[in-house]
Image 1 (cartoon, helix red, strand yellow):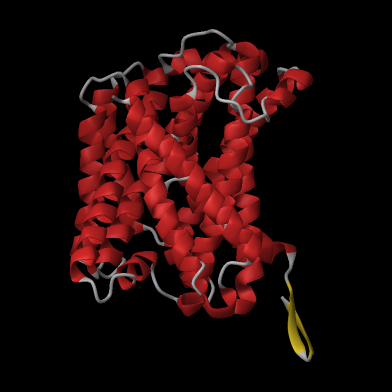
Image 2: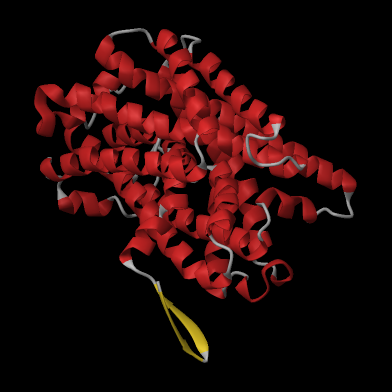
Amino acid sequence: MNQESLGVTKVKYTLMDKVKSMGPAFIIVGSFLGPGTITTATKTGASFGYGLLWTIVFSIIATIVLQEMSARLGIITQKELPVHIIDLFENKPILKNIAILFVGGAITLGGIAYMSGNMIGTSLGISNITGLPTQYISPIIGIIILGIINLGDVEWLEKILSVLVALMVIVFAVTMIVVKPDLGELAKGFVPIIPKGGLMHCIALIGTTIVPYNLFIHCSNSQKHWKTPEELNLSKWGTYAAITIGGLVTASVMITAAAVMRGMSVNSAADMAFQLEPVLGKYSNIFMSIGLFSAGLSSAIVTPLGVSYVLGGLLGWKLDKTDKRFLYTNMGILISGIFGSVTGINPISIIMAAQALNGIFLPVIVIFLVYITCSEKVLGKYANTKTVKILGILISIITFVLGTSSVLSMF
């Protein structure tokens, strides 16, 4: 990294600096690029063709905007997002307790549902190859994940997740190119229209990409990687690049499913493997299993940490395994996910429900983040620019409307 001083310090970053800067954002990508993403994108493509492709575009743009806010907040203030939320109600103890209860409860409940889907996806990958029931595989995977999240440091996790994401990019992106989707029809998918019966798929796609606890994770990890405002541009580059890569994987899954599975019913991993047959033939089932395992493992590693970061920040814990409360929360979320995965409920239903649940809780967390990062009292000259502020407000409104619609549709 070279520096030139001409009144103002200018920093030139090398290619290796930029590659390393994607580490914290790859944790976010590894989290949202789980079985829920593959399942939801596949079902959406099979059911509605390219019609909801715009939802993925919106989700990725929104994720980039929100995660950049979160990272900037952590770097500039060197404080956790939950601490900032509590500070909003500093002199209002009743509202403060309500905020802690709601945010903590929502993230925990969403994390448990999400963890169940992750465990099922990971187990399905192995079950599809070995023939063993997922109920037997989940506990074993759980023990492996517990070891990974409690024995490795953050940088080690970043490397693991980077490899898993790269594997998914290769498998799904190549398949999308080979199936040669109709480009004219595909272009129509960028028009924001919700077809009949497509609302819950929209919410699930948004919920599987803009994951609430990822906003807390990124704020915390960014302040560990970067300490000065001069490093903001490097942080932004890493966020933009990594999340865009994740979005391309999601889009490639939906586009491939739309091209080769239109009208098919998706109820199992074997059904989803059908979309890989144009490239992989008889090996498609194996590669889909590998994809599901990679997606499930990457997301399952991050989910317990995400919930622990949120509860730890809200309740004043030390945010690492030396604090037993942090460790026990990791274990609790993991055990809850294992329990949810062995209940015998249709795994695809659990995965879809988890994404929809995240979509319902998301608006509240987004509104908190946008409000805090718009405050010059908190961020000074690094508060949201006018453009980012407008984008943040629009994202808040859209997620609120979709979340409200989801609740109303249940009745």
